[in-house]
Length: 32
Image 1: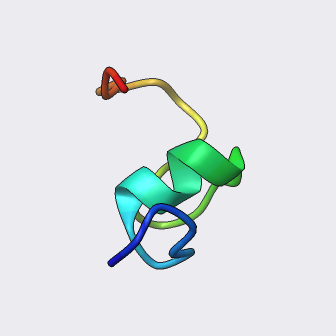
Image 2 (image 1 turned 45 degrees about the vertical axis):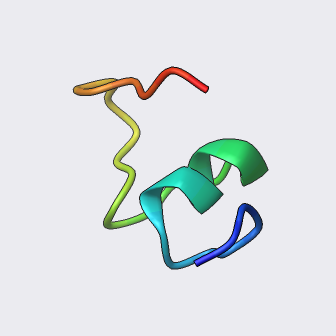
């Protein structure tokens, strides 16, 4: 579970990718 982990919500935010754990709609933006 690191910063660049694709499978985690935080990893997706850092990579700027979207998926199941991070949908395209901004429902809950996590401050870095």
